[in-house]
Image (cartoon, rainbow, N blue to C red; front, side, top):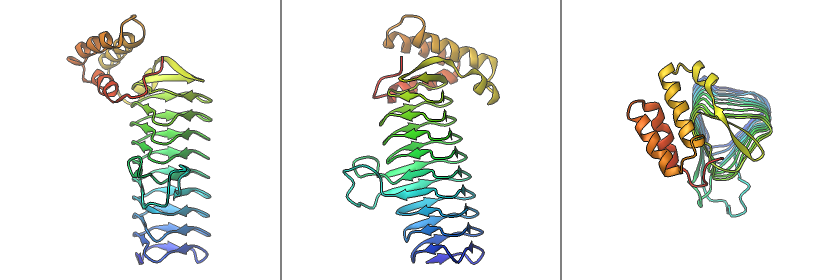
Length: 263
């Protein structure tokens, strides 16, 4: 067991032999940290937190009470293989959030980036890949193998179907059900979710120029409003992307999409 001498661990918590605890880590009362867990510098486990499995947690994360990270996933095919969970830096993981380990049938790892906020009772299932600066509101649920790109916001009580991809800068409204892929920059809402235009306010807050916003809106119109086939829309978006790199994100996303896009 490697516990940095600057770490502060409440005597009621259990740290299994083999765990690695970095500098200035704080572990509050009644936490459990398994033998294959590594916790990076400055991370804090408030209380009653379980971190298990082959799990790596980065620096300066705040993990609140009753969160469960790296536990056995809910895939019935899972047979105890040493699959992994990886968490980046500076995430805020609020009360009762669950993040499950990967499967050998998937990518072997559930991976979360940095600077994310997961609100109360959010669930990230096996083999999910979550980018940076995402927000999952209360009770948001990601099915297995879901991918969230950067700057995605998922509203409360929203469920994302297995294997769906959510593009960068997307906002999905609360109480939605997402059953297909959501291209970047969109607002999506409903059960099943449908497009409701471009996430203009979010893009403005992130410093997108007027020219970039215009290109993104024209790309959205090509995809959804001009009556074009998907191949025709791609061709039109490609012309826009030749002058405005922001539109290239649409093309990159469409090349990854496997479930079809929301309509």
